[in-house]
Image (cartoon, rainbow, N blue to C red):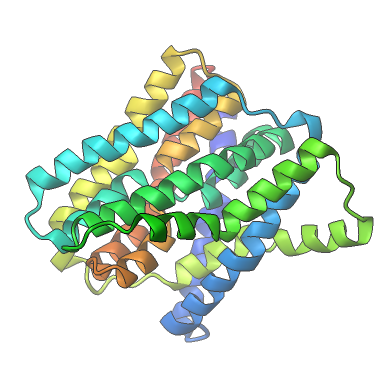
Length: 312
């Protein structure tokens, strides 16, 4: 019974926040345009502040084991390569190939990783997740650009990829947080409290906006690539990599962080990137919507099972 309550406490609040957002959409208080504008503000302001404060506040309690880092990086690269072969075998439309490829390996680790890790193991786990974000998010961004440009008929722009990584607000905030943490730089209390309050807005507002962005009108047209991508993203990859992590000895907070790396839904920004780079943006939108909804159930089952069998 304890395992059930722990699982519910970790994922039900996320579902309820998405449900509130969908109700807001139905009432007309927010449409696609306003949701996109608010989402841009979240990713450029509130999420970077949250990442910075999480790393800054973690202090000496935030550690990033080298084996954890290696496993996450190697796992993402393996996901990318396996997914590349799979989309070449199962899909003929290049505009869909790139979207499916980034959907299979690119997770919403920023939004799901920190709240779930904090819900299960407290601030130290959230600090570990925040530190890992500084490594994993650049990988996701670079590989996502490569995935989409591989199938748009043009040669991948290396400088464009590097510039996008260097100017990503999440990466900048993570690196600043690591610098403040490592060198012991002091943040004045008034500034810290303000940044902490603003950063606290990020998670609830992001999930509300995600719910407000849900549109099911294109589902039928995208059914086959949708099912293939979601099967790999939410079931095959999490089961394979979490199982491998258990065999390698990962337990507790570190295992929870790896679960959110590989089991979180598809990143919301993948929809915007598909729009800008010639991918099938309707398929990308459906993947974000359905992975976000279904991941509430899959994450619940993973958390319950891992806790029940004593791995958490």
